[in-house]
Length: 381
Image (cartoon, rainbow, N blue to C red; front, side, top):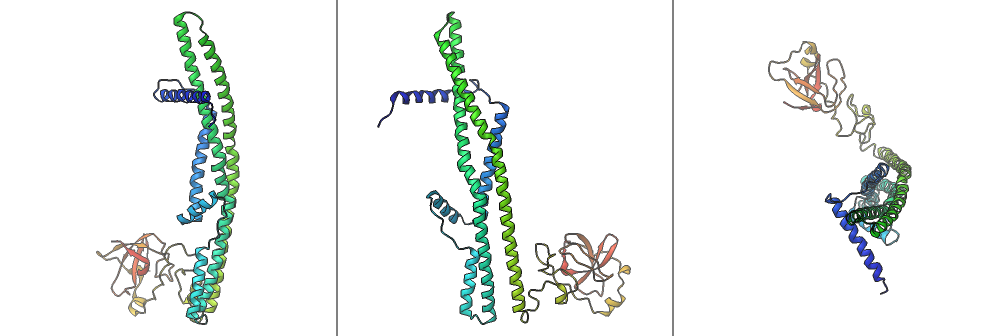
């Protein structure tokens, strides 16, 4: 093996002096050259950019591919510079299972024909998902990865080189200081002082040059932010297009199933509460329904003549004992003046009176009072 012994020894000596300088700085036994405030701010901003870009990149990978085994497989394919094999999506696999099941159940049966229809739409959803994954990987993940594996590695290398130049500079400063102390004791001009001053000038020049190179690279982080902002917009557009396609597919599927199974399941896909004979309360599939469990059906008005004819809400008085607090689970619109409209999550006082239907209670909210359905409440005390 051909190597230069002198260079090897020189490099080892430089490494040793840097290590000594670094250790003494940590112990507070040596002075340290501080970087200017602008450069320190650029370094802090770059570190922040790297840390958050890495977190966003990793979590986006998890979002696009929740399976860790699949992510590891894709990682190895990328490192080996090989094309990642096309992988069927879960929705496409579900659609295929549904259509295969329909063949065994009989494609002409109601269940079999419905499985075929739903399976076809599941495949369409899977196709939309695959398109979204590919678009997001190209337009969002790839630029983030290029920054982490390309630009950031270059910045890190130059920062390490800058740190070495700083250590060399501080070593030269300490050496010059020692030479001047020795000169003062000997009371004569020493060649060591000239040598130390020359080394200090060289070290200062190299440090200033490297600081400028590092500063230019760190200022490029602003351009990185602009690029990542553009990529973020593209990612959001891809998400919006994907969810819009899914929504459109599901609307088409609901219409198709509603027309095909309308005679068998007349209310299965109703989107208008009036078609099911319910006068109040939101439908589970209505566009105004909020996330969470759907509200129960409104209980029928009691036919009891005593309650419907003689019970006057304004004359009802709460009992001395037996009132309870209740939390409203769903919004409720009063059908007439004898009922009390409700808002989800509000607290009201409830009680019953003799002769009332068990599906109803008297509810009070401040000065307002009226009948409320029990199924819309959670009794607290």
